[in-house]
Length: 401
Image 1: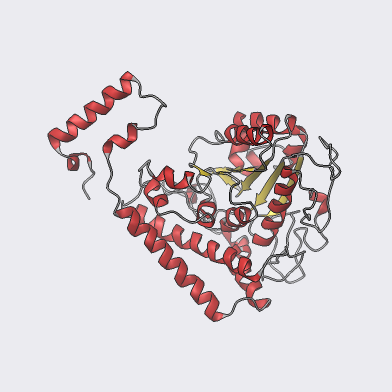
Image 2: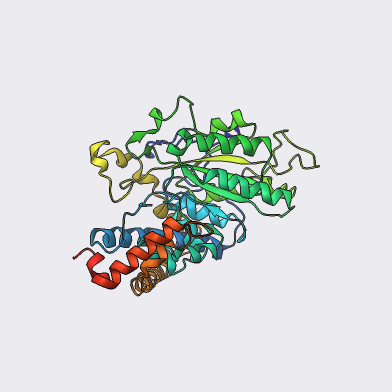
């Protein structure tokens, strides 16, 4: 579904009297008050509640993680508030064995896939937490901006070569589109028609650089045209719109001629098509238009580069109240269901924190998987550290509270 395919009433405009829309021309299903303005995906009520539950869990995890960082109990952390819908709904739209390559803010993907206890230990600096992510087909978070995109394309190419019916889904921020890795990955994706879905989170800021200073392109989705495949802009704070667009993109990547489009139709971009449906593993670039309510990370001070009241225009579009209002409006959830969801979120996050804080770290772990085979220099460093720990005790290397 291209930008032009957005349905009437779902194009970024609001009814008279509604809040100003800061997103422009986007595909949308829910209005700011949870009213239906587009085509709702055909999902069971239980799945709709699951999407809501995962978003609530992501926000609760966010609140607790920021608090833990301020107490010195975890390291630098990237907040998700305002962006829960795009990572949660996108992951619900995939199959469980479709690998997710994420940057560092898409905690919702991990939560949807089961929220392993090792996840918080990973943010504490324990590399063993990576194993928990591997078990749920989520690749480790990536600090190098956009550096994971060629990896995602490579995985998608491998699926194609092996005739494996899987899709690689990569998440990245608007700042990544200024990196060479983005260009190289998208160019390969287009040339080789990889089964990939590329989700660009346009949260308006790449740390302190606003989107308008990132590119002269009118939109980030428009960049897909240069690579020979489709780009779509979607309201990234609308979980149902994100689900619809990602589900269609995943079907297109699989060459699935039975999938229904987000607008209820099947589209054909004509590029690389060699089957009856008009598709054969075509990638899609999805720009999720959203807002980062908090700081870039806990090491950032957004008051230095943006006005304190800037987020006011975006607050009415907060994905969690919108989804809750929709569930109530449709009779899918009442006070008891909402309260149960919140309690479950609190309990699950508490369990993950408890498990992470019981983790017994081994200083040698940091050397374990740097290379497939440990180099002599790395072994020298490892032995030196362990000898120092033996001489002085591990507590000598810990920052005193």
